[in-house]
Image 1 (spheres, helix red, strand yellow):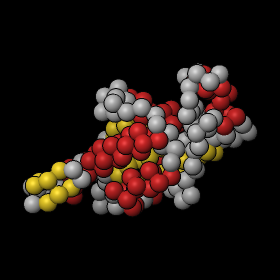
Image 2 (image 1 turned 90 degrees about the vertical axis):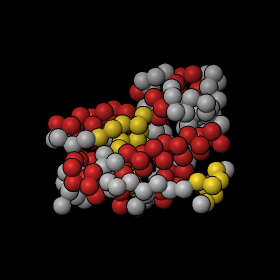
Image 3 (image 1 turned 120 degrees about the vertical axis):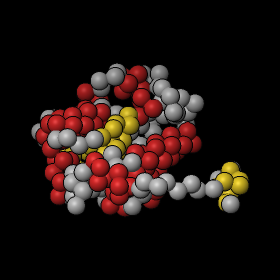
Length: 208
């Protein structure tokens, strides 16, 4: 019997099948690829390209997209600081479950605050959390502006927009940093291959 958060008298139920057995079945190791960066930096583009390339290699992945999750799991949250903290906490917990299931979970969120990303890392075995920083300049992201959000933020129609009137805290020790080249975002395939190369090198794409 224990107390966790606001819950009392709860018990942890062990499963007869563990992560080791699930990974053996899938011939891969579960992990979280956490893609962070400004709006318009190419997070979703990378997530989709990475998932496609992994699928082509026979590897099972699942994308947790920040906007998509706000249609369901996080639809009760806004964009105030405390809501952003809770948004990332929930996604971190779900990502942890996907990794425990043996999947390569691809989380694609702005996740602007360093302490929130670090909290998600601490939920897992450190080596299973792979932080990918989309290090694209604000100038490039604003020029891309695929959703028209920067234009709205500059016009004062969106308040607390990351990079404009709310800060983005860059990672200090990310596993992978993807940078713009000559003022352009690298191609989706090139970025995906860089992440896959890391996963291969660290042994996530086989269960040995």
